[in-house]
Length: 266
Image (cartoon, rainbow, N blue to C red):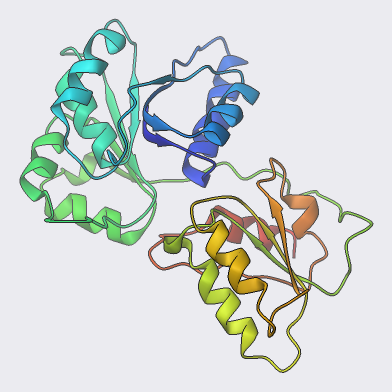
């Protein structure tokens, strides 16, 4: 289960794992606090039909209503994996005794308001295994009382390391692949390119709430014609392969799967 279903690396990892588990006879039921249309489409593309609670902003919220909604839907599960604080806190409140709970965090804890440390401690008491993708998440849960024996470093599946470049793409190009969201820092990339006397061509793969403002910035004279928005791509590897450089700006991310893919592609 996830607090928010969108075209992001954490959600894509979950869907890839569910597909691999299905091949081994293990079925996954996908429960979400909220979901956007692209996120639902990606889930269906991986063979899952998400069930959605329908309230936004649950990533960093301890919402009892979400926990109550989850309770009958988690009954009888063999294992529950919940991603991001608002998801695993609610799952901890909802699941039956004896059902293993696995929690995960892909990024640092970036509380939008007052840090919910007491709620964090409360939820961690029920977590059987915690996968932390990055040192900030690891340090935060240990400081909040999670026993070190329950903590493991998170590792996401990375696909496409054998990809070949799209033949029609220019060899001299920059690539960006990720959510178009402030926390990912695509605006930082555009401003950096605007400082160059002759900005290189840059292809941006992804979608998100910052897309409109990024398009407006790219249309200004100092970047006009240099930035190409290509939307979310299920398989970014052929776009990245052969590029001059893959740029991975970020304001608060532990470690991007895109960076690993770029390193693997050379």
